[in-house]
Image 1 (cartoon, rainbow, N blue to C red):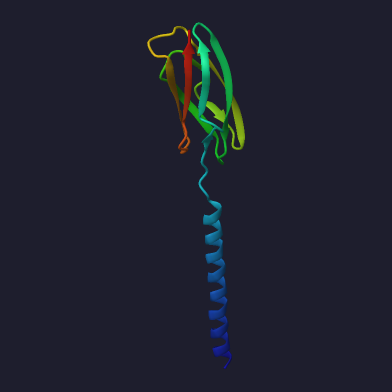
Image 2: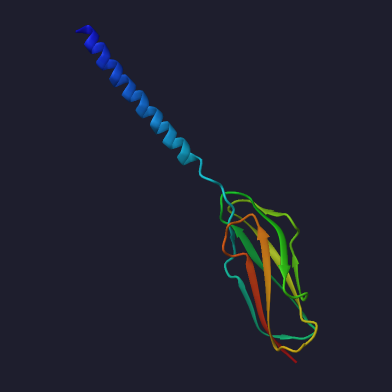
Amino acid sequence: MWKLKKIKFKKYFMKIINSILIMITILTFAACEKKKATFYVKSNLLQYDSVVAGKTYDTSFYIYNTGTDTLSIFNHTCTCECTLIDLPDGQKINPKDSFLLKLKLNIDSYGSAKDKKVQCTFKSNSDSIFSRLEIKYTVKK
């Protein structure tokens, strides 16, 4: 009889140990959530109703990192040389932080098109959908 109780106790004890190990494994995997950076701006469109040729327009906007990892912006390009962005390559933004991006739009000539659209693209370590800024303006004489 004593052997029977000992065997039942061993089985019961092993079930408890296995349950604890399974819970530890599940909690470990749940805690290992992959960190990622998120590139976010409130609006990706800057629109000027009318600009004057020969003038320079300064503006700025914030880039937010709403992710859990550091956001690194390592390159940016614009479709027009009239747009200057003050952003050093490799700019880092900590999680839940922001960076004020300064932009200069130099309307040097009227050109052939009255309505213009400029796109600036940012390359980063983010998986975000948004990585482009669009600037629309109408040149008046």
